[in-house]
Image (cartoon, rainbow, N blue to C red; front, side, top):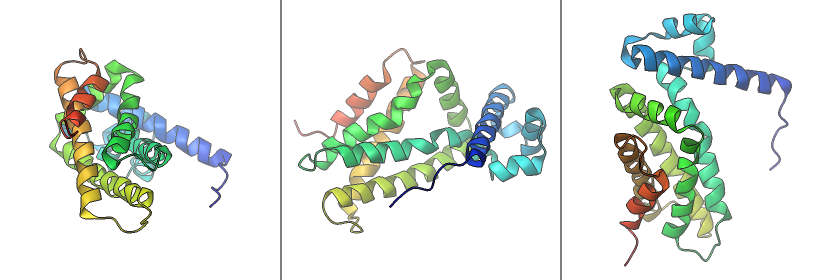
Length: 196
């Protein structure tokens, strides 16, 4: 299947969306996520509330949009792994793609992780997002097994466990203020399920 070409309109829309998300996250970090309305974020960004909501259906989406590409990258890594590699080992490599963006700016990543941890609404939306990721990555495991569309409970459980390892590693990394390498924490979490 060929992807549709990216237009200048797509590029402009992505740039506006990224800018709005950046302004929103900064505003939420300063004022507190639960204390700020979508209208206040729109004002801070210099756009109308309706414009903000056209790009993001909710405040939560504005924060979590930073993670949107991660699942696609993890799926690409998983598809690229050797087919004779066991599912758990392949998932270990794919999970590294989920944490790679945390290295872009450790200070910003720590602040974003804290913002999410401090808000019940953001934690709930993150769980929804990770549930979608679980289904997508379990589907890739089924493809690798030569059974596309046959997502077994085993694939779902393996993927859920791997994603939970990422969540726990990020939570620990945040609690330690980034003093321990996130990859080390992720490897430690994932090794829990590796046969000795």
